[in-house]
Amino acid sequence: MNARAALRLAAIAAAAFAAAVAAIGLWPGPDRPKTEEAVALVGGAFALVDQDGRRRTDAEFRGKHMLVFFGFTQCPDFCPTALYTITQALEKLGPKAERLAPIFVSVDPERDTPAQLKNYAQNFDKRIVMLTGSAAEIAAVARAYRVYYAKRPLEKPGEYTMDHSAYIYLLDGDGKYLTHFRHAVPADELAKALERRL
Image (tube, rainbow, N blue to C red; front, side):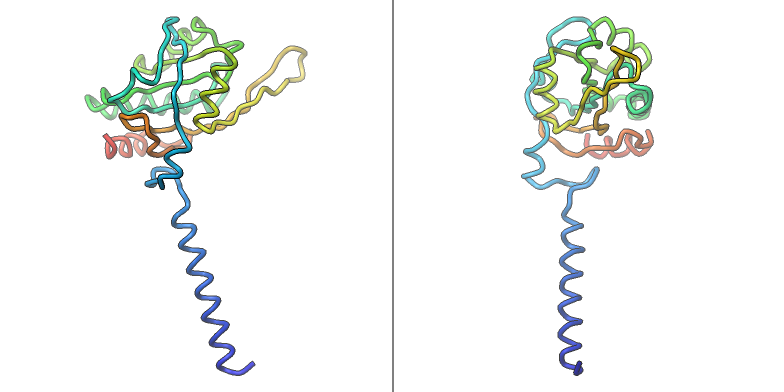
C-alpha cells in the first residue's frame, strides 16, 4: 500500500470515528437535554385512584414538576429503594420540594388496592401520591411512559411477582418529559438535579 492510499484510509477511519462519537453524544441519557422526538415519547394523560380512594388526573398537577416512578408494593428492592431516595431528596430540597408532585404508579393493580397503597405509603414521605387503577388504566399510563411490566409466576401455585422497568421520570409543569434517573440514583445527586430544574 502506498503512502497516499494509507493516508486516505486513515482519513476515512478518523471520519467514521468522529461520526460515532457524535452519535453517542446525541443519544439521550439520564439528566441530559432531550430532542423534541424524545420529549414526545414519554408521558401522557392519566386518570387513576389514589391511596385515599380519590380519582386523580395528570391535569391537577399542572404547574408542578411531576416525579413519577412505576412499581408495586410487594417489590423487594427497586421500589423501596427508589421511594426512599425520593423521600430523602424531598427532605434535602426543603421548601423547593413544594414545586414537585412525587407520584408512585402501581403496575400491580390486582393486589395494590387503595388500602394497600395507603398502608405502603406510611413508609415514605407523605407527599408522595400513590396511584392505582384498573388493569386497562394501568396499561394505558405505562404505555404512555414507555414502561415495561409483566406478571411472572413464582414456584408456589397462585403466587407471582412483577417484572418492570425502574426509572424515575421528571416532567415539567406542563406535563412534558424532561429527563429520567435510575432507581438507585444517590439522593444527593437526585436532589441537586431536581434543584437545577425547579
